[in-house]
Image: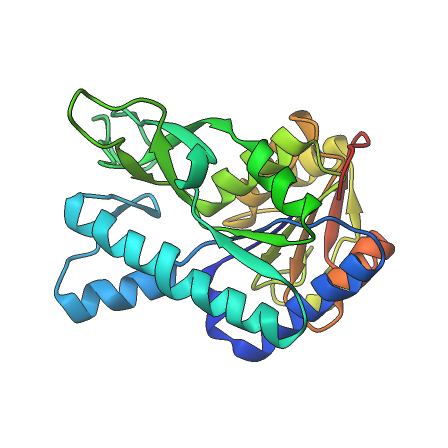
Amino acid sequence: MVKFGGEVVLRTADLLALLEDVAHLRSQGWSIVVCHGGGPQANALQERLGVATHKVAGRRVTDAATLQIMKCVLAGEVSVDVCAAAAAVGVPAVGVSGVSAQLVAARRRGPKLVAGAGPEPVDFGLVGDVERIGVELIEHLWAGGYVPVVNTLGIAAKAEPGQACEVYNINADTVAAAIAASLAVEHLFLVTDVPGVLRDVRDPGSRIPTLSQAQAEAAIADGTISGGMIPKVEEALGNLARGVGAVHILGAARGALREAATNPGARGTVFLGGAGRAP
């Protein structure tokens, strides 16, 4: 399972390099799901259309106009760009919306307290919490020899009488984690703009190759892991608890995915847990 954000998609060279690694791993027998976000593309389209971007604690508030933009960006622009890049390196990618066959079944998130957002519950609007992943669609595409490229729209399991099922915007990390857990994957690769967890954020050479849960918790407690890396690490540990075999945080450099997959810890940072069933 490979997840990356819209930032990687904007950098064509990085995207092609990443997908070349996907092609190599497929040639070695790996079955792979790709999950992508589209934050920068959504911000750019909102600006062009004059639709204000509203975020709370770094998460997008999704009103009806914003959801329309997310549909255009996630199921349109970014999905097409990823599949086009995949075709260039010989990866038979199929762009799939989380809405398709209710792949990402979700419920609308109610107002909730958010750290750093004050004492009142925050209503994120048309944002969903995942209830179920329809792994049957992914397995069907795998059986046909395809690589699913999943965007992070979700859909309500049921509709109100006379209405279509409601569609939701969902964070890409959340969707990737839910898919990885539902498939009990051996490896979840979270591709970021950093080369892994660093002891010193100013020194790429201070990368920590491997972390157990106890080591990660200790590194947070003593301040070695700090700032924006804390939620990434906590999310990685949560994925291990949900049955993912190993979670990797790594950059998009050429060969990084291939090397991390075949030699865990050689690139990025790998969080080690129990074995899963499918890469």
